[in-house]
Amino acid sequence: MQMVFPGCHLKLRREQQYDAVLALPITVDNVRRETQRDPVLSQVHQLVTKGWLNNHVPELDPFYLRRNEITVHSGCLMWGIRVIFPPPPLPNFVHKYLKNSIKDI
Image 1 (cartoon, helix red, strand yellow):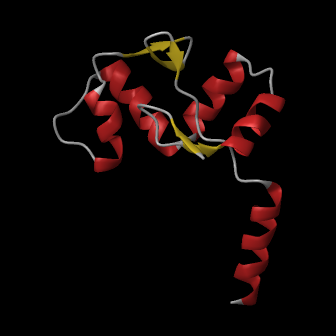
Image 2 (cartoon, rainbow, N blue to C red; image 1 turned 60 degrees about the vertical axis):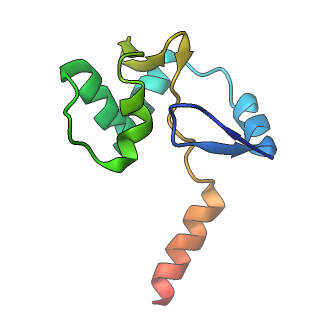
């Protein structure tokens, strides 16, 4: 089963949700740092603070539709009272697999 978070480009399966809960507590500093590292959310952060453009990449459409509801608080993106979390990083084994695959080419 997948859960889709409105306004976010992230879909999580049930076991990923469980893993995310185990990684708590998450601090404001963690969310702020990861938001700035994420290519999509860093663009959204910039657009929320400086103003939205009428033309944007399709990847930003879910955020553009909610542009009047998204705010920045302490460097974190908020949708109403909800925090817009960056997607979790790929697990270590995926990075190792990708690194080994690239070596083989």
